Image (tube, rainbow, N blue to C red; front, side, top):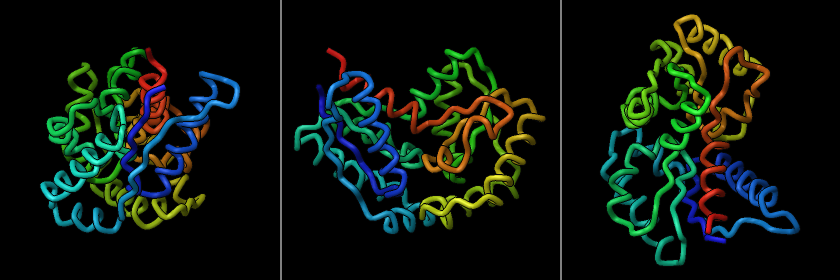
Length: 230
């Protein structure tokens, strides 16, 4: 089995979901008492939150590239960044390491295509929704992306940082998300991409009127596929 190098802490709560899911999927695939071989480097989310808010993406890239190189040198066979937003700098990080980086948006696009869906709504931080790094990757696979209106984007962004990344999940927040998804469905969305790992805790498939593409589940499955491949 190959060793996965995880960049975590963005948020720690999302990383705990990744950790659990990777081990569960590995055990389902291999049986007995098998679990994932992991190297985890967990960063301080507050440092990165402030840099994101300030638009200091060069600094974020430099710091995460350093972490990826450390994981590579420690024996990781690939890199898995346990957050969607920081995939904004994934292409640059790829250029600085010799091992694969498993890209959340690429793996999500493959899953959407497999279900023959052409238009999806994208929910996530404002960085994920407004910057092209995620939607452009989907576009490369022939998938059209729509995002919420300004008020709904503001609501989603605030709820991620003030609630979800802190492990706070409220019924009223869940209901608001369902309302937003229904609105996007009325605008032609055939599915919804959960672009923040915490969304899968807040909402379940039965809560939504269109198919969910849970990036943490898709990303984790791709990582395990890589780890157990010959």
